[in-house]
Amino acid sequence: MAGIAGAGIAGLGIKSPSVPVSSSNPENDILKKWHQLEKSHLQRFNMSGFATKPIDKVRIGIIGMGQRGPSHMITMSHVENTEIKAICDLRPEKANAAKKLLAGTKHDPVVYSGNSEEWKKLCERDDIDLVIGVSRFAFGVSGVLRCKVF
Image 1 (cartoon, rainbow, N blue to C red):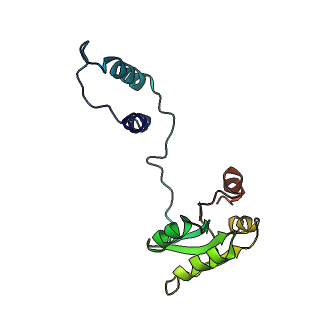
Image 2 (cartoon, rainbow, N blue to C red):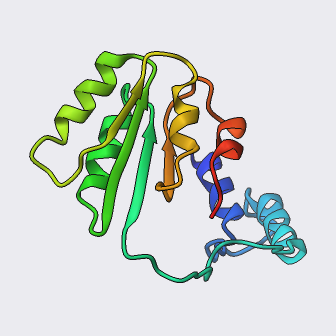
Image 3 (cartoon, one colour):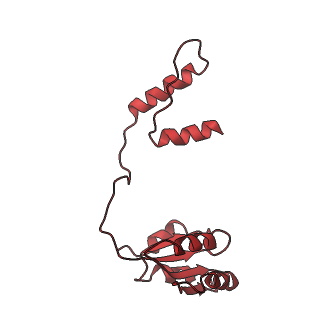
């Protein structure tokens, strides 16, 4: 596990801990390779520091109301300046149960459900700024590309 976590840290560009490099250290080869990789890595682009004009309210659509979707929905419902505009799930009982979780809040999402094409309707709406996709069903790259870009 430590090796996997270390690989993730390396990918983030975080510097390795200061460990003496000597011939008696069994990690000598690994540390040498780490330092070589640090020196040769060229950062091309990341979103750190990206900024755009703020919007007054982020209007959200969520696809997938199975196990993770309702949790994301509840979390986003507590974030200031958000409005959950639409939710979607293939199974009507899951989508309707999720909507009931928002009863008594400022959020009153439209429910899309019942067939495998409903998520497309959510993505095509002009009044949604952010789509959270937590369904593996028929979503993914094609779903992301289908969403309107403003």
